[in-house]
Length: 601
Figure 1 (tube, rainbow, N blue to C red):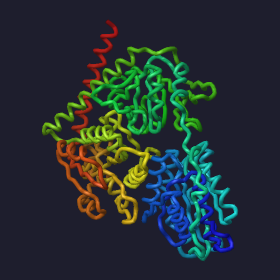
Figure 2: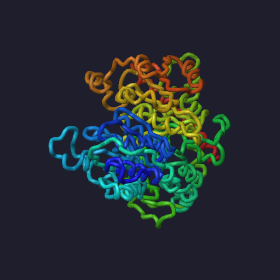
Figure 3: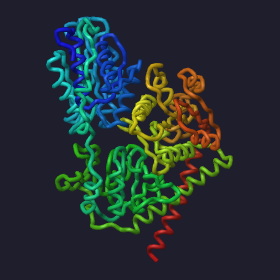
Figure 4: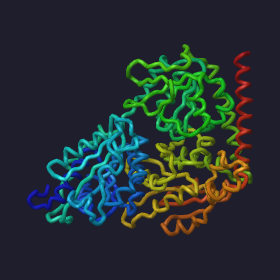
């Protein structure tokens, strides 16, 4: 390490902060360049050259925040995003809020001017500390940083960084804010060739806590009851599948729950391995429309965020709700629910209908039969599109998710219609991730870039794709504007291009009496030339108008950054979707009725 007497304070402080981050298990850092952050930039570059971490440089701070978020989700490690002073810090707020609700260890490192210049009308200076609110995550303010720490003394920096990382990782994981004031001179005087690798932690204790599948399955005798379904919301993990199998209960899993796959290499046509009750069922809204009235008990893992049918189910007075909390603190709640923790204390009963004992295999078989019928109907929709029929969003979602499953890749799902098309028609076995913390469309492209950067590590396999709408793409155009000196990535961006916000047509805003307002203030049709945008950021571009074209593109290797614009018609889309839902309900109802008759006979 450089001798302290040879270094300016700013250099010593930055090198100490970086060494402590490396020692704390940090492997990736995102930097948005600036003058006040220069000491950190020099130190981070030296650490990368020493092989201690990987540095990713992003010009726009908002994109940098979401890129760090994607890296943190993908690597399950804390990822710092380093920015200069002033409004640069404020641009990280959207990513910080998402990280707070999603429980992701995002580490904001704001490089400040000396305290004497704050509140003195100095240029590019504002109050960093408290910008995101006081540290309140542990007290219930999940939108706020779990810790806010300022450090200006190199001698105190190491322990301060250690405390910040500890708060980022638990007991309630989430974002933290480290503010580091730097005084001139900002350039290093002595060599920055520090042996950061000597400080490198092995990272074995730096992963977010999750309950084991065995400990969750052990809850089965506690939560067993007739008429039970397992609801796997965002972040539930494969443990939900294990619990459903132990209960012989239907599994209603959101795409980003982690309970829908992967299948461990089992071809989709070969059927679901093991207990059929653990099969993640398709089209949760459809199945609840058909069979939901018979549900008497819902066991919830993760955080459900998608369908109104699930929301209504969990609000019903005649449905007992058991919530399986993660090993830290409740992530989700509904009134009068019973909370259980794997390996924890005895459950606290809620005020709804008491639970009975034991399950009913015939109950699960009816749901599986209905799910298989829906799967077959969705396959028929794909077949019709491949035979020359119109290309619809649900067909795209099914084809894209099947390609992800086959490639053992990762699919980043955009909010709004993209994630809902996957909820309706995505195939089991595809690994899907999504920013469901606050479920916004912002930063989706940059988040996907973060996942793709994580995929450049040797231990990862399978390409990264992102499925999003055209408005979601437009909301983060800067995400693909990457520097020429940055690491190359493989990323396929599949755009559902229907010229506007199609989700609003499926809501009350799409009713005929609101037609005059709908197009202007909800659908908001744009004039973005996606092909020109792809050319501007150096991405390959393909326009798709048929299912066959899409299948061909998806069957090609993902190399570099490519944008696939899938042209869809928004005119009449809500009516066509309503027709599909009716066909799926009919198929599910017929199959469930047949299964019930067989069981009775």
